[in-house]
Each structure stands twice: as C-alpha cells, then as structure tokens.
Amino acid sequence: MTDPRRYFDDIQVGEEYESPGRTVTEADIVLFAGLSGDYNVLHTDAEFMKQSIFGERIAHGLLGLAIQAGLFTRATQAYATLAFVGLRWKFKGPIKIGDTIRLRAKVAAKKEISKPDRGLVTVERTVVNQRGEVVQEGETDLIVERRR
Amino acid sequence: MTVTETHVALYGGLTGDGAREHGLVPDLLPLCLTTGLGWRVPQPPLAVMAFMGFEWVVDAPLRVGDTIHSRSKTTLKRSMKEGGVIVEERQVINQRGEVVQHGKFTFLVAKRPASA
Image (cartoon, rainbow over all chains, first blue to last red; front, side, top):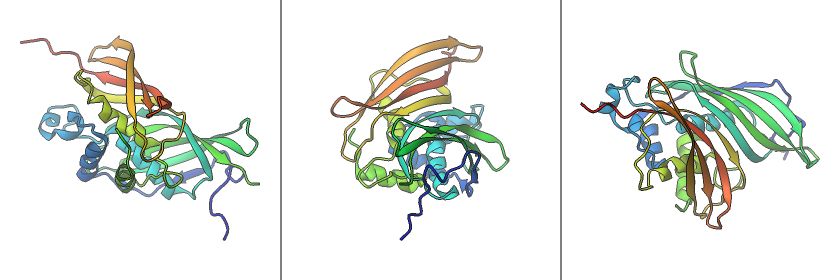
C-alpha cells in the first residue's frame, strides 16, 4: 500500500488549501466549556452577554483554533508530521453561535534543520466566517519527515 | 489534572483534531485545558473582555495518563482607554516537573467600574 501522507519533499512553498465550512453551534461551546473548564461569562452567560459589545455569547478563541486544526485535516492530504513545534496566533473577531467558519491555509516557508531526515514547514492560516471576515489568523510550525 | 482517553475522545469528536499516534495527547488539547486550570487558583479569574492573541511552543509530547498542572505569571500590564492589556506567561508542567508546553497570552481586561 502506498503511503498517502505528504513528506517534506512533496510540500511546496506557496501551496494553498481551503477547507469545507463548519457551523459553530451552541453545543460546541457548551461542550468546550465542559471539556476545558473555561466557564468565562463570554461563553456561558447569555443574559450577561446581551449587554456586552458582542450582544450574545461567543465561542472560546481556543475552540476556534482547535476547530481549524480539525479543518486542516479536511483541507489537504495529511502531512508526514513528526512534531508540532509551536504557533503564533491572533484573534481578530468573535465567532458567534451559528457562524460558519472555514480555514484558508498557505505554505509560507520550508526550512532545513539540523536533523537531515526532517524539515520545518511554516503554514499561514486564516479562519474566515460566512461573510469573509477574518476572525482568527496565525502561523504554525510543523516538523515534517523527508522521504528516504 | 490527569489527561485521559476521555479527554482525547471528547476533544477529537468536538474539533476533528487528533493526535499523531495512539497514546499521545493532541498538541492543542493541553493548551485548551490550561484555561480551565487557571480557574482553579484561589485568585479570582481576570475580567477578560477579549483574548487578543498568543504565542505557544510545544516542548515535549504529552501521553494519555500524564498529569499536568499549569503555572502563570503576569509579565506586562498596560492601561488603555477601555480596560488594559495584560500579558501572561504560562507553562504546562507534567508529573515529572518537565515543561511540556509554554507560551505567552495577551488579554484585554476590563477596568474596575467606578463604584456608584
């Protein structure tokens, strides 16, 4: 069976991917609050949030981040990732209940590292809502295996 | 808190994100759990108006069954017209005292309302 994963050698700088959409529901937010223990009123108190600048509960920023990580796996073939080394991330706008988000990703850089059997791939990521507004954006660094 | 198979399964179902291999914890899950851990310190939580951004480094993999805690330090505070910016450094530490993930968070925090 051929290995369906994409190796460091296969990935080209400038490649772009777009994921399917994903509607973020109240259930997602309630589950994420329960899983993470983050019960901040921003995410859990509908009455309090009516008075806020958002007008309603918003999704946890890290829920949006985690959902885009899941969407990445649906946007492209899996990388032969050996390690996730880090990320830099900005929250630009709220994700509200019922919003549909998708991920746009682009390979920004490839770098050799000290170990010859692997390399560093930096992916620029933008999370957009149904109106095309950027709600989150950032860069992730992955260590990806080379073909032998 | 001990990170279990249940956390991994719930997180996977909710987000569609998973670990690279069985027995490992997905890399973003410990990060997600630190916010909740921060709620269990005696000090009341920050009056966060918005989470502006963060930088995060994964130092070592975490395995199912490992027990983590988190340590935070406020490193910068800047007052603005509406609220202020707080930068917090945070570490996730395993049962052997090893830092498995660490980074820096930037929050917009409300000012105490003038008492009536």
